[in-house]
View 1 (spheres, rainbow over the protein chains, first blue to last red):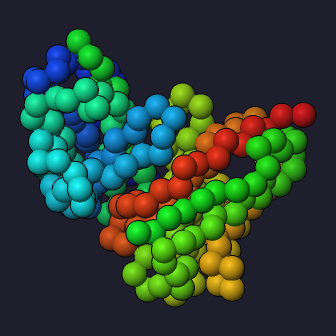
View 2: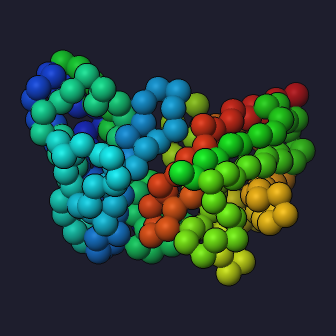
Length: 108
Length: 118
């Protein structure tokens, strides 16, 4: 099973600033990685798939990069609605599909 | 636009079977474009993939749950079902029905909280 590790667990950033979230895989997943955003009481929403492709309707301030074992989600200028929990998920070696433990992005 | 809606009991007794249904609208469960699955999230914790069903009928389960899980499709009702046997308190979670087409999970239901308690 591929273990996905996200860092940091909590990230405090001011609105308007840039946020950088990291995700590491225990072995290479190529570019088969997705990022999700989850607001309290809501289902996750896919932001990025293929490591760097924005899903339909996702604002351009969200960008993904990386391949192999190291991945980054960058939010270029934080808006109030971006403060949420973010998860990465690999779909290269499955079953099982595996998720990271999440990064909580909070207002500084 | 694909829409998913989970339904089922919100309370299940320990050792019993958790049974949920996902009703699909805006698309066919028989479509070759999508796969369908269940993902759960214990309160305050992260996401765990339970299993997925593919258009060719192949079903894959998380090895950690495989001995207790069964998923099936009802094409006449356009529904996906989940049965999880011999539940314990550790199975208390929000259960999501989800769908995708390239490996990510692109469509999600609102989720349903299932509590395991006597």
